Length: 261
Image (cartoon, one colour):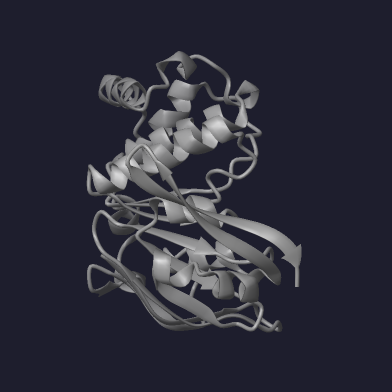
């Protein structure tokens, strides 16, 4: 569904951040992007969906160069969920979810009963109806993240792109968010791309992984083949242990950092 060919990016007057990135993701699949802080993971997401222009290379959406598509063609099919750090404006949960319909509305069109009904239905679907009248500035990190996911889904996208969706959340809310992403992709066919700092989380839900390192190299492929002890150690400069544990009839793989190299 989405493909990057030889993607390169650097800010004017600065060094190149991304070099010859190649990846592709099919419908209903999850891609996890990993790498140390400051490596350019968020920049990669923005280039991938056209928020920043590739210096060289291109993004293809169903075989068409994203540069040749109109904004409405892009944003009616892709929903981007940035890192959640609160909002300067005071919206209720319901109002925030309704904002997700903006790409389907006219320039001066105001949300009506249809949009309210869709927002209420989406909040019910994602299990957050109790947040409808709560101010987003007063929500916990986990609550806000679920509202942002609901806002993305009301757009009826084919692809959701999430920037560190589980960072700063406790175990309960991490699992809540990860379960939602997995259900959306593997049961409803919505592709997902997510940045994450947690290799174990990537291993638990992602079909594909792209791991970056400070040598400007990257590994892309099946998650189990990319997230090996050697590759993780090379990217993060730490030694890790990879464990496989039985749990309720399935095997759970965990990746544990043990020492700095």
